[in-house]
Image (tube, rainbow, N blue to C red; front, side, top):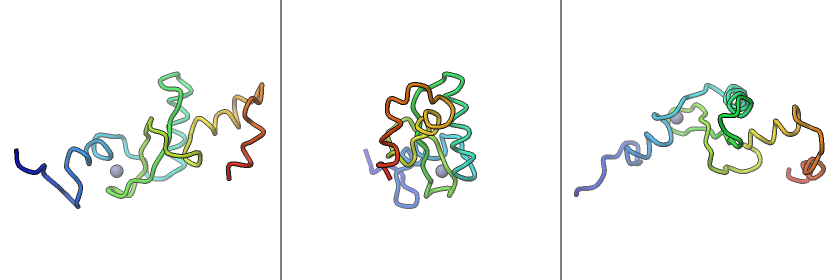
Length: 94
Ligand SMILES: [Zn+2]
């Protein structure tokens, strides 16, 4: 086996996983809106967004990316507030 093909210093399969194999969103708000939709229809329960250095767009991931990018937290704050299990410590996160 030779070294994997690379582009911009990244293995091509990593580019596919992180960028080209995913849906691209032009900005953070669009990405978060799409993520909220996926959570809303029950396709997944937790989603994070991240800015992509490869295409300069945004993508969704199921890997924990930090509270700032956690889309499901937006939903629990805005739309699904009922019990407020963890609503009180949100402000302390930032
Ligand atoms: Zn990308």
